[in-house]
Each structure stands twice: as structure tokens, then as C-alpha cells.
Image 1 (cartoon, rainbow, N blue to C red):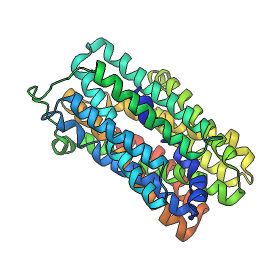
Image 2 (image 1 turned 45 degrees about the vertical axis):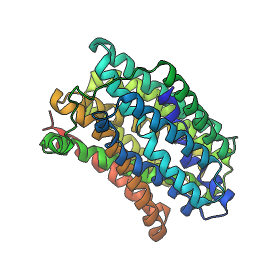
Image 3 (image 1 turned 90 degrees about the horizontal axis):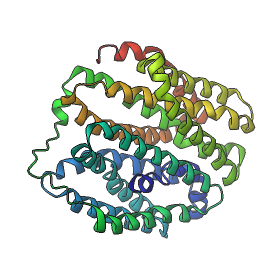
Image 4 (image 1 turned 60 degrees about the horizontal axis):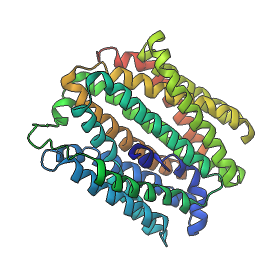
Length: 365
């Protein structure tokens, strides 16, 4: 339920920006700050919560952050001005980023080794279902309703955690987080350079697609959200297929294929001429990101144990931080050179990353 809660509404935000801008009577580019104001604190604070389990029991920490997320989501949905919406969306990122690492710490410390993969796979499968549901509902629901849902769900999480969650006291277990030491490894630097560039480019397009569709084609919310729904369902489906392909063609090859598929979509997107073709083309975008995600995560899983734990935390933090930065800088670039030039730069970047990914990662194992 925690994974479902924190994932609900994340992908829907990019589709809902035009509706939120209309509600607050502000420019869409201004309202789009809601994207990176969530992603940047999410990435930064994802590095903060895990070390605190050395001084506070996991249950107390989890209940505190769940309460913070519940209140932030509720007040965000009830915000009377876009400035208040900015504030509470920022706080949603601060508190929401705690759910995944704290749960993974509990799983890592308590679940038998043979069952860990099953648990983690189920958790992230639930996240994709949540993402698909929220994007689909954004077609018809007012944006406030979409974000009342995670507030209510987090309240349910708190009630269940109070009654059933163990204390998980790791304060004397010597849990250490050595991010700086981990980054001294050459293989980690190379790997995370790929992660940072990939997330930066992906969100540089993804988070501005809804605004582009509204401004260029004057699409209604239902049409914009439908396009995002197709992309999300595609990503979820190909995420599951990615594991099969990894074993056949290799992790790096799958990630390269993902980036090239994303570049192919952008090429078709820029030359399509009308938005109807997007309903078909967007499948390539979802599939490409899914293959890239699976390939890079599978590659990281081959790191030695002494690196893997901290690298896993860094992966989430850097992915969201660089994604938020991509959305932020994307807005600045679009305001200067326009959508098409910006999207062409993104297309060129993902294709080059796909072509040279093997050279970048070949020495990281």
C-alpha cells in the first residue's frame, strides 16, 4: 500500500499541468514548476532518511514521514493559490521519498535472501499499477481529486502501520551509509553518469509534453491524459518483458535499445504533423524508457555487495534529482528557443547516449 500511495499521481502531474494552470489562472510554464518542485526534494531527501534509522527506530521514522506526506498531499489538493501548491508539492517530495528506502531497508534486514527479489518485484509492480491508475483517472477527474487519493491512502498506511508494523530497531545494527566512499569507485561514477544523463533527457521531454500538446493542439484534458495513459501502460508492460530480454541480449544492450527507441519516437514525433499519430508512436517512448530502466538496474545489480546497497539509494536519489533538473532546465530552454528545438536536442541526446552507452559502461563490472 505504501508503494501504491507514493506512486499515485507522480506521472499524472505532467498531464495535469494545463488543467492546474487554468484553475489558478497562471501560465502553463509557471505551473510546470510543480514537476521539479517535487522531484528535486525527492531526490535530495532520499539520501537523508536511510541514515536516520541509525538513531530512530524505523517505525517511528516511517510514521513521521507518512504523516508529513498525508498532510502535504491533503493541503496541496486544497491549495487556494499556486504559491501554496508549490509549497505543499515540495513537502510531498520531502516526505514521500522516505517510503521506498525505509521499506527496502526493512526487507533487506528481515526477509530471507531467496524471497527478497519476490518482495521487491511485487512492490515495484504495484507502483506501476498505481501510476497507470492515476494517469487514467486524470482523464476525467479534477486535479484536486487525484491528489486527495494519496492523502487518504497515506492515512490508511498510518493506521495499518500503527497496528501491524514492527519497530525494526536497527539503531545498534551499525547501519552505515557511505555515499562519498561509494562515489570514489570508478564503476559507480560511470554508471551514475549514464543514469543522470538518461533521467535528465527523459524528464526534459516527458514533463513538458502535456504543456506542448495543450499549447500546440489545444487538446482537452481527456486527450492529453489518454496519450500519457498509453505511454504508462506501455512502460509497465515492457518493464515486465525487460527481464526476459535482459537474459537474452544482455543488460547494456537492452539499455542501449531503450535509448534508441526513445530517440526513434522523438524523430517520429517531430515529423508527425498531427497529434493523432501520437497515440501509436508514444508506445515506443514507454517501451524505450522501460528497457533502459530494466537494463541499467540489472547492470547495477551486478555490483559487489559492498557497493550495491549505497548505490541502490543513490540510484533513486540521482534519478529524481537529475529528472527534476531536466524539467527545470527544459522550461528555461523552451522559453528561449521553443518546443521543437528543445525536443530535437533531447532526441539527439538520447540517441547519442544509446550509441555510446557500451563505451561508458563496459568497465563498470
